Length: 128
Image 1 (cartoon, helix red, strand yellow):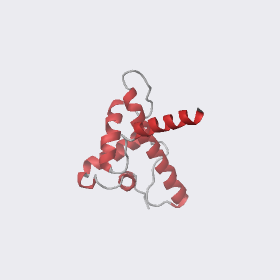
Image 2 (cartoon, helix red, strand yellow; image 1 turned 60 degrees about the vertical axis):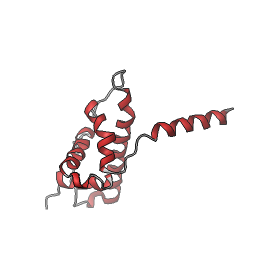
Image 3 (spheres, rainbow, N blue to C red; image 1 turned 135 degrees about the horizontal axis):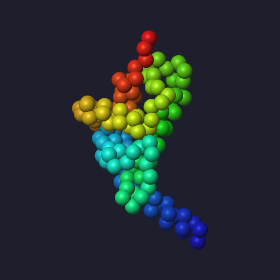
Image 4 (cartoon, rainbow, N blue to C red; image 1 turned 90 degrees about the horizontal axis):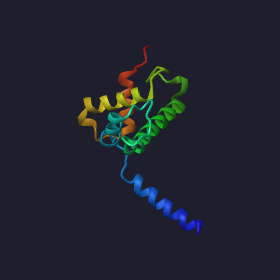
């Protein structure tokens, strides 16, 4: 019985997530921007008016935080490429990525992690 329930829940969860792909800049614009426009990424709350945006916002925030921590783990203190201030909020970070993609529409088909890096390199270059 438990196995059947687990399989049913797994099937349901896959169908929910199938609507959200976050691989390119175009995906970011389609999934993240509507949620960003509706919710404050730094302090969003679930209510009856915004529940449909919670999953995409969680995906976008999770993606951003995962890449941020991965870049820090790879580059650490030796990073001379991107010097992001410590006080940049998640909402600001997503807005920086959004602005970069909107300012460079010819690149919107590129992979989102590359666009993220380019956006932050442009917004927060290290001073030598």
